[in-house]
Length: 213
Ligand SMILES: N[C@@H](CCC(=O)N[C@@H](CS)C(=O)NCC(=O)O)C(=O)O
Picture 1 (spheres, rainbow, N blue to C red):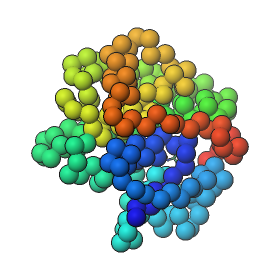
Picture 2 (picture 1 turned 90 degrees about the vertical axis):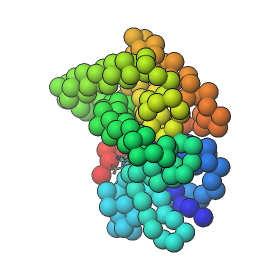
Picture 3 (picture 1 turned 60 degrees about the horizontal axis):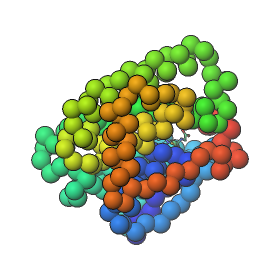
Picture 4 (picture 1 turned 135 degrees about the vertical axis):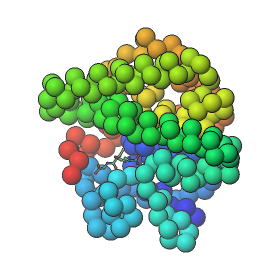
């Protein structure tokens, strides 16, 4: 059975949980307490050299990390990933966008906001991230005005990846008021059969106020 190395408040890990849920694929969970430094232990860094979750381990012992790489692997041959080269490349385009402009921008602001770390960040860094976040939301707003899902007409892993942090922008004190097409897309994703509504606040982990190692 597939093993998921997980940490419940991680929205990167939620992406994988969401796809496994859609696929009705059984798996076992190993929790990695990232704020206690478990990710940086040698044992886990043999599974993922960066020490981050999510990662998966297959029955044959092969391991794979990076949330979006895991989505690409698990979605192969399923309705959540197109089977033509161009369609897959379009998905990859939005997976790259997600890592550069959503996870590291909205995701970072959300992490700092929800765990009390914002006060320890410089005003300049916060302003830079907030400007970048507004640009990200504006791009998504313009794109989602033209089609129902980010990589085309069908829901798939690009939507799952983007949804993980972009849909939580308000938890980073980013207003979604000016982005009606984006909000309509959030509602479309939430209306998908098998949508995994359960997400976990950092507050469930008393160690989450720690800086990551
Ligand atoms: N680009 C990676 C980012 C993974 C990541 O940063 N995961 C966080 C949790 S959301 C983590 O494990 N952080 C622990 C650390 O940085 O030591 C992915 O998409 O999987």
